Image (cartoon, rainbow, N blue to C red):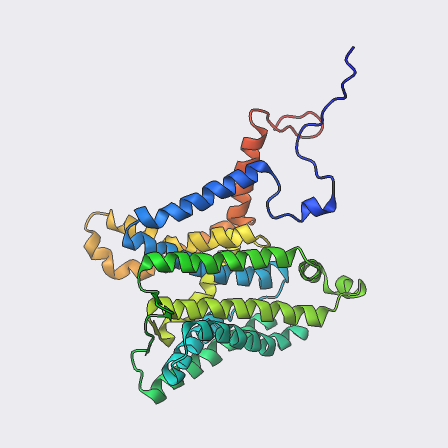
Length: 360
């Protein structure tokens, strides 16, 4: 009879510190390294159009992660996301036009302006909830867009504010390949900040507030302060995304920040999966690429040119249908689909059986 002790199968944590690690297992490290390698190789093999799509995805990831912190984790509904993006973009454009401010000045300035706006428009969250809070944040969008439009009119920028190509010393951010790495760095920074924030006392306080405000307050959590902090952090991050958007496109105009943009970001966190940073990223990728997928599908139809004027209608219709389908049939979003696929391969070839020995 062997004296060896049996080994436990599976992955087990032996301390609380292990649960706080961003990357825990060797398999996760390997997957992360391979994923980063693919991202590093992509700009050298991709076309200009594909690089532009990737850059749009990075910008959308920053905004969707910021909204996920506010709505998916802190439980505060917001429809003013487009206004915050506009605030960041106009901050960069106005500082450049009026003062000739450089890239490394306008980006932090956009973050500060976004934080101030988040503080101001976060105050209604101390009294309002649900639909009433959503309507109050909707006012943010109209206020910022109105002020931006007035500035364009008064200064005679009828076609928008043109921003020169940013420079960092002798380094010029002109090529899309360079922008790819810059935007990837900002998106990665937003992701790391969010993940670490959610592992802190602040993240746990937001989760408690989302579950039940009264119980959270009874546990000693400063609910008003935590709500305002969620608005400030989310708004600051979103404004930075807006400033980067302005620099990447080379101009800022109010037409780029319609109410539909706010709805798109809400759709990102719903389709991706509420309460998940991975869901925010998956939703950003899906919603950003959906219009191009629809355009490609329409192009395959017979007499495709006759449908060219209906592309906008197709996009709106498909967007609404996809949101309804996810809300009805997949409330957990894309991250729920991903977890089921992951569990299938983890459990294969063993099939899960319900309790009691019944058949599935």
